[in-house]
Length: 379
Ligand SMILES: Cc1ncc(COP(=O)(O)O)c(C=O)c1O
Image (tube, rainbow, N blue to C red; front, top):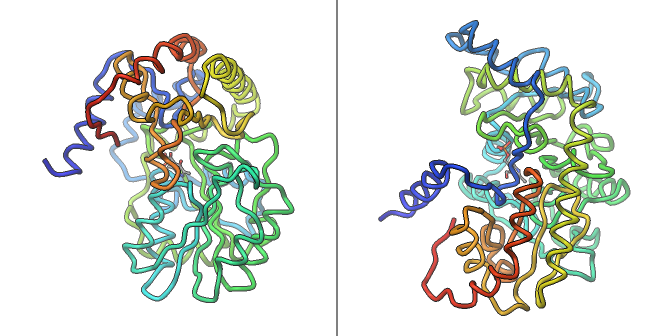
């Protein structure tokens, strides 16, 4: 079977498993605010879906996204996309070309690297799975990796999967390196809302920072496909020239996103408190099993990296035995061929009962994983 068929069947099986506990993709499974559901229902009942939405997104949504980021319309404009992934596709395909290079971290999110390569760019991955650097990119590392051929520096901040977040000083230094080399700084802020403090590169590098925005994680709209790219108006003008979807993102999703941004201040703090509570429980459960450890706590994203290498089991075996119990977690290899054999990733924006079930099973799952012998192909 071809690989894409196998991968599709794997995910098809997951979405068709009733009651599956999704703890592997950092999606948000808390009950949404009623205003968000009502906005979708109202849109469907009014049959808004017959028409195309505006190509760059509903004006109300574009304004609310800028407000949420604290950016001024003179310096930044918004193109609403089918998820952050489409935003990344547009940026990477447009700005990359043969002869340029694309610099990112390892681990990080792999898809933008594929987009850059598809446009002919070469890619450089800077290893950041280093306790001595606090599992973060350092200014010296970035300085050494960037040259005048660098067109894009792509930083996931907070990082997926490590959950580390950069300070304002670090971001300002990274942006300065980008500016000096005339490179764009693509700041993937998909997990921004979960951080205690987050600083946007767009504040210090408005002409060359490109902010990637998602509604999948903080608001829980992953299946609706809605996000945005936010950048200097000249850049958005350029990206709007030939995007893969110039007929507007889902109107139902946009109505949900508008409603979500309006109730964010009253709804989201408790969501973040609850996912931090899940992090704390998972940390405690991990400390009770010899050989397991959490790499970065508290994580500044809705996820934890759980190292299992010292317990003498493979991440794939642990994912497999949890899957048999109806819990999906992610093997490290999804993020990084270099460090992926060390860990699994566990997502925490889930009902407390899911996190507790994960914790309760942990000792038994580690024991069971020792006896898994078959080759496992996970995605
Ligand atoms: C770093 C990062 N960027 C982008 C995305 C994609 O987000 P969206 O669902 O908005 O397309 C993900 C999804 O996991 C991610 O981890």
